[in-house]
Length: 138
Image (cartoon, rainbow, N blue to C red; front, side):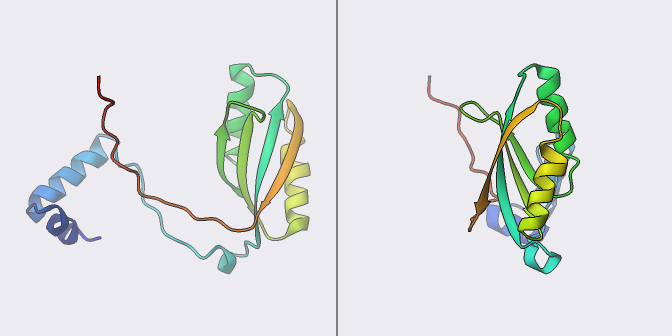
């Protein structure tokens, strides 16, 4: 939306809206913008979730693993979890051969990985807006 459209939607002047949005950027509340991209047009033919078990749960191992996988181009997101799996990584690939190579060359070769399970994503829906959360009542 343009600044003028945002101002109309929140019933403020364009200059006030601009100042408030600038403050959100300056305060680090707004941290980036994104574009919706047709992944298939860029060669993505498959998405998968890699469920990963680590041998050690020491902070340095977990942080090192997350840092390492965040540099892999095919990684869309990585989540540190409680429960059965330590980390779930969302990846994209051209095809199943690329996915296999990615799992074997870039994930199972990472230090501390003891097990990896792959789930292919058939379909997905993504929301980018974040709901306004109010503090819990006392």
